[in-house]
Image 1 (tube, rainbow, N blue to C red):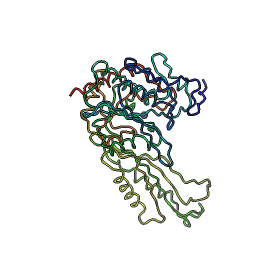
Image 2: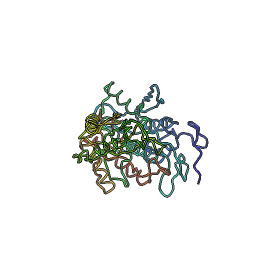
Image 3: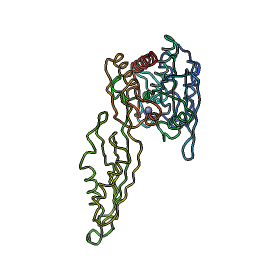
Length: 408
Ligand SMILES: [Zn+2]
């Protein structure tokens, strides 16, 4: 089957009108809301009405909704939604995103039709993470029908800028809350952190990420007369050997060992008889809580300068810290998620800090954070999907967490 022709942003041809007339009973099933969200073509930074669909659902359940659009020069404007129910503490927040990554190639179905086939819901965002958002809304609709609103506050912090630059989304919302004194105690980030099966993993932190470009400068020359030039390649190889000779660490209580991965070595030299004037390598370090970006940069600099010492030429290092590592020590929220997941799925999720970054890196500045959502096996791929059975399990897990959280 050929790839579906991409629609221009905002082009709704052939797609159903947004669903905006929800009922509490209807929202107790996560599937209609998940489908309605998937049918909005909200590839970052386009929203295509996805937040309108969600806001209408949340207002049906009694939430007060506030749009928080942010913009800044050089980045696309992004709309975000903050919905809150109740006043005072404790305050449990659910954080997620309605934006999705581009379709890509290889789909065997329309990525925005939200078709259900053999008990599986297909579509861009089914797992990452429109499906997860629908489960949290459904969980609260069930709670509302059975036990009424909780005493305390429940909120949803939903961004349209998680898959993009991330500059006008959760980061700005968190900064605004801090400035306004909007206090949140605990936050579930609903990313699809289960690797293959529901109930495998709760994340309580993430490793940091550091990108480095190392350029060794020598002197260009003829390959037949190496004594007249300074070949930067052996020096670069010695530096990479020194950088990878020893592990960065052996892991910590809640983290795997940090890793250094060389991603590129480049001299840009098309000739066979020329010694190049410079050689460049790039590498990425995923680091645990035994380091900071700054301490790692200092360590790298010491290693590189020790190799360079006494040799001709120069070297420069360009390092960018993409995010520091962070950890919310396992506690009440991760206990509630583990207990509920075990009761619903029969598996007790392991506590993990593996994987890439998420918006939890911003939220951890204002609240205790744990991440739990659907299964991530198909995210960012063609034919992204979520089994309906997983949507039901996650809804029930979230409902038990809400009950447990507000029972105390
Ligand atoms: Zn996501």
